[in-house]
Image (cartoon, rainbow, N blue to C red; front, side):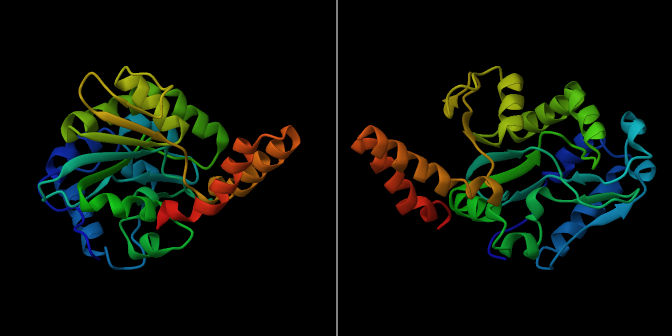
Length: 258
């Protein structure tokens, strides 16, 4: 791996925040981060267990639920003298149907499999930032449940999740925040009391905020239909500037992640 993962003393500042989510003590969480760092060049890292053995009592209502997941925040290049950038996603999605809670990392980027997968654009998005930035990656919603009903319960409790995210922001003191998707944009607009109308803004705290859409394959595959829509509407209206937009999207879409 070209870049350092989980280095520095940041974990000792983050662990007390994570104890709002999990029942592990400081030593157990420290060992868990060490395990993630040690497996950074392996295909995958997960820790599995019963929800009741992992979750803080604040989440007792989810002890008997299925398909649960938590992503521990991760950080790259943190021992370097660079600007600090937070990337904030939505939640730790999982696909299993068992009464287990699986702990992993945001977008699977703590491990080789997640970073090298051609389907995972998040590393292609993140890696270029590491040249000039320390990068910290976390989620808005700290718990995921497979059931839509349970996910609604999680997202209804915004006070808890936003509160934890605000603590992370206060510790990181980022120069930049990049939100991935609508949920992260709404959360940051609320926490930092800023507008969500502009794709880029500077908050009263001097943080540069960038609102970007999801960069999953499902979203990116819409580039071509959108480009073709500009071409079609441009031809129907006989407006060359619309046609040019469509052509430019098709021509340059692959440059986003080079």
